[in-house]
Length: 94
Length: 94
DNA sequence: TTGACATGCAACCCCACGGTTGCGTATGAT
DNA sequence: ATCATACGCAACCGTGGGGTTGCATGTCAA
Image (spheres, chains in turn blue, cyan, green, brown):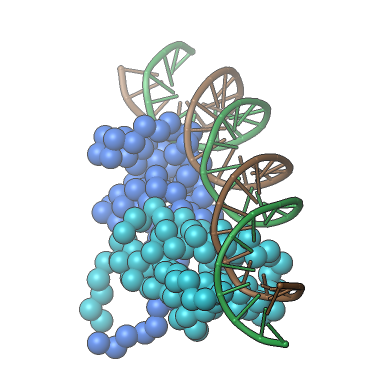
């Protein structure tokens, strides 16, 4: 896992919104996700821009994708987040 | 606290190294921190570039600074990190 | 088989960001 | 009083990232 890819993936507000949707629904189509961002978050974005964001998330290991017929199905993976956040926070056992 | 500022602050590898140093020493001079990055992490960076990074960290609330005589003393604050990381991770009580 | 649809790919644009350069300022030791 | 030092400020530069546009491809329903 590459720290740099993960942090860069999190640096963009649109990608963070995507992760918000993923934490609600772990599995979504690219088309579904795009529709959701536009309708529920009033994001003005094109399909191509979304595809680029997905590529970034995928390279960071936060999303894995699989071609299923006509659709590209995206699956959320929160493991990179867990490993990344412990970097500067001392363990508290309270 | 502004999420965007925090995530953008974390997006740069040099700033992450700074936070590494801060988690060891919560309080440092800008001069000290610069020297540490150069010597311990082989980072080639100028004082002015460091000052810019500190500004970014400060706007994100991760660092507060105070002028003490000739020096600028920097104090680490991990609160923004704590509030930010819980966004996508469901609580696990194991 | 035809056509709508979901996606892939490549070239291009714009601007924010990290870095440098140059100069000015104030503090403190001698 | 002098001078090295730690820092602030502003202008400039080059690159990368987010976005768009245009076109090609593959899948599925009728």
